[in-house]
Image (cartoon, helix red, strand yellow):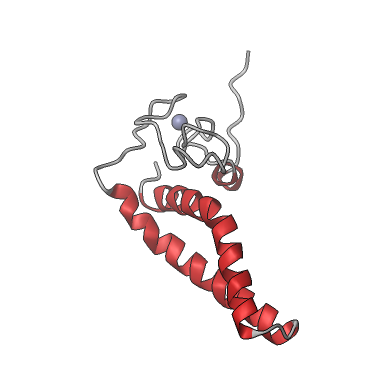
Length: 122
Ligand SMILES: [Zn+2]
C-alpha cells in the first residue's frame, strides 16, 4: 500500500491535525463542542509520535492568537448589528456576547492549533 499523501497545511489546521504528519488529531475529543475536556490534548501525536505538549505552559501563548480573534469578532458584530441593522446598543452587545459564547470553543481550539503551527512547526 502506498503511503498516504499528506494533507495540505490549511486542511490540517482546519481539521486540527498534527503539524508534522497532518494526520494525528491534536485533541483527545474530536468534536469542537465536547465541553468537558475541550482543550485536552495528547502528549504526543497518535500517528507519528511528535511531541504536542512542547513544555509546561506552552499553550498560554495561544491567548495572543485568541485575543485579536475575539476583538475582531466583537467589533464587527457590534458594528454590523448597531450600524447596519440599527439595533439598540444594548441588544447589539447582547448579540455580540452571545456570538462570542457560541464560538468560544472554536476560538480556543483554533488559537492553540495556530499557535502550535506558528511556533513549533517541524
Ligand atoms: Zn503526527
